[in-house]
Image (cartoon, rainbow over all chains, first blue to last red; front, top):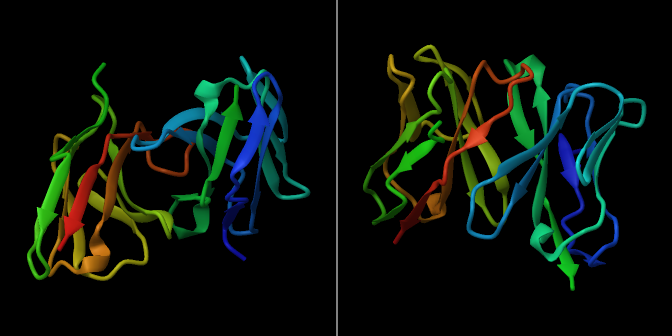
Length: 112
Length: 115
């Protein structure tokens, strides 16, 4: 099993809908997780971080962490065409001195 | 506050050559991490430097090396370039060492093409 796994997509949603992006992680990954957004040709930018079980909301974005099931998700409400990008999930592997490992990314396309 | 600055933005090299990439972190950030990004492999961790010491290393051959200076600026070197080294190389800085709750902030990357 890969340490951090994401469906590569593409995920296509209509404008105004809720986009749901999911990520699962292995036992080697810690409980600190980050969601990054990467537009084509650009570098990743941090959207949200989540460290404890449950939900964390920031504007149209909600991150969810479920430690028992080892998954973390990102919900984007009222999706806009400008949200079209690749979303990267990342978690920390502590027992190797602490390194941030990224999933393959999920490509999101929001159709007007 | 200025972001992470990487130079150069683009590089074209031939096989067998070596290359040095530079990264200036956000002011006050002491940790610098390097990643390689390719379409097939995604973002792969290369190494992390903190207080001028390599703290962690990914699964890359010894041709990939780096260093960090006292002002936290970092350089990455790739020797004996191979075609497969063509990639986007991203530098990221954080306030503390990776593993804490301090997220990484990425630079714009250096696009390396090996011919």
